[in-house]
Image 1: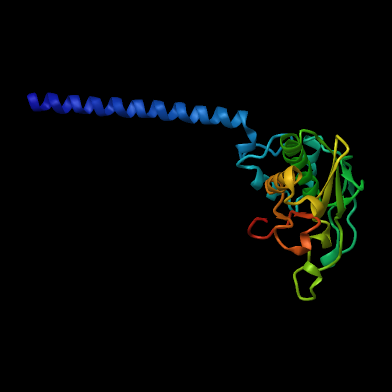
Image 2: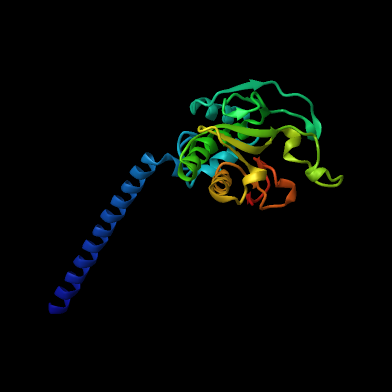
Length: 241
């Protein structure tokens, strides 16, 4: 009887422990679900909203936009990003099946043509990278972002046997500088690595890596001494240099 009583007590204790474990696990799952609802940028099941800061799930959601114009333009519309959908033109390696006009007044020259994923990346980068970096490092805001173009039918580095550049299909944009609210100008060529403006440029380069598949800066090579190359290519790995 004594042995039976001890065994029974142990069994009851084990059962209570399992019940307690189930309750704790359920509470943790509920807390996690609530947290994900409050932080959709970390939830892979929530649709992408470019007004949310980058999170754990953002990179995957941005990747889903490549080659899916309908989904991408839904994201732009949901996020209230101004754009103009244009018909595709051409074919082959320099065809432009996705022509989405950039209507953001911050981007100069205006009305540039790029792919929809480039538009999405720019919106995310400007809202959650560029402006924050300007306030943190320069105590001001950015009013203009200067670019060197998006479309260029050529191979990488213009080498004959190289793969086609993302510029060939307008899936890239080159950024050369920033105009600040206080009237000052920050040039990639002139200010990279130079004081506070250099710190700002490094910060916006780093933040761009959360919005684009490939980011190349003066740190990469001499060919990028005067601009940041940003693209949404579908290569197997992200590049941030």
